[in-house]
Length: 196
Image 1 (tube, helix red, strand yellow):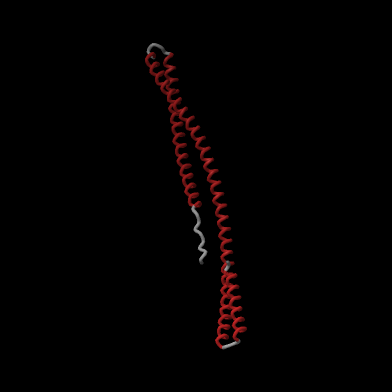
Image 2 (image 1 turned 135 degrees about the vertical axis):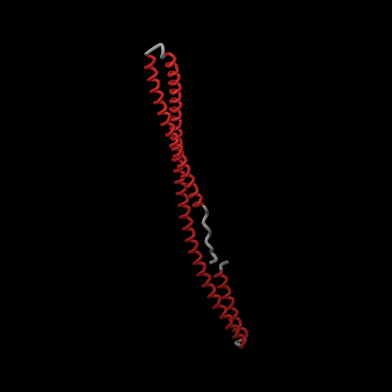
């Protein structure tokens, strides 16, 4: 039962009691005082009903504002989650690409090392036969050039691996920062105090 209904019933009872007092016993001083008190009580109750109605309307407005804020916050969280998901997808694609590139570079590095080993073996054989054959001298020179080229290729591949490792670390830091920011945004907002 609402406050307004209760107040109306009390006002009706007060009016009825006043009318009953007048009808039954006439108008004595005490009856008049009771009637005046009932009338004042009736006015006070009406004022309370008006105040409570106003307070109820204000609370409804505050609730509407709170619901609107909650809906906006939920929309922001949804958008942030979508952005985070897209970012994670891009990072995953980058990791796959980076892993593929790293595997390729390691393969090139291993190939260069193998070529370097082969060149060193060729150089050793060429030095052993250099006394016997003048043509082996040309082979030794070619092997040395190949070894230098292989060392340069190995150094280049090693630099590339270092660069990719640094880029990976930077992207991981960026991902961690984005995840932390999303965690902050996902924290629930405090509920408004409806008693104020």
